[in-house]
Length: 277
Image 1 (cartoon, rainbow, N blue to C red):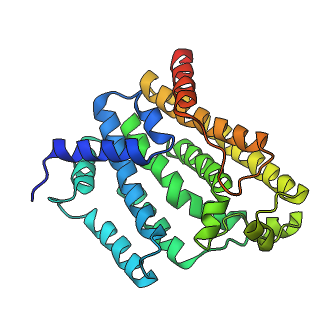
Image 2: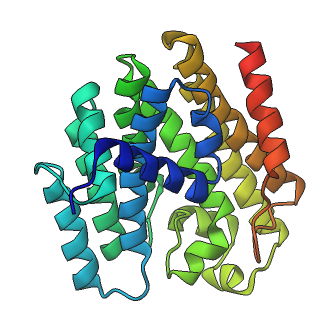
């Protein structure tokens, strides 16, 4: 069955509202055309993540599905709401195809790599799975600042990694660099047992400082954006920084469920960011 553009956008916006933890709050600040385009980008990134994280699929099946998503970027879609919406968004905005293909590459990387020797390896991964989202979105926001947008994406991914340590462990993945685990005296056994030791807290404080550094760099994007786009990106930054503060306030104990923000808290943060723009 052929999916209309309106049906496609309605579906990606529904998906974003239901699945995005912080993303959907920020994009509410955008005018409708931009909001729908960003939702289409999110839906594509979500589709990649869902395949890469699906425990019911074998590695061979995951790779085949991810490669099919990459191939679909170069075809004319008809029956996939996500692809129909993304195709229309790409006609309206100069969304970089290499950024979308980088998302697929990041998903493929998750099928073959579950540990990172050092931060250089990790940041390469972050560029594919989150920096690429920033680069894809910057065309919709309307600024030619891909490096600043990439830095913002990396910052948010680094905070996600801190928040989702327990969930990632259940998937067999450890994103914290191996050399840093060793340097701070934290073992994978500590992660498996959920031990929030002083060594773990010191390691996570180090991760937090680095995430803030990238967040600071990402915020240099804001002056290049129009008011509503800047408010949207500022909301992302503020929401993730608030999540980071919750993690810190909990003593970096992210085992058994990471600290989160209530819907009311999120609305207050987004509203405050809009007022200050």
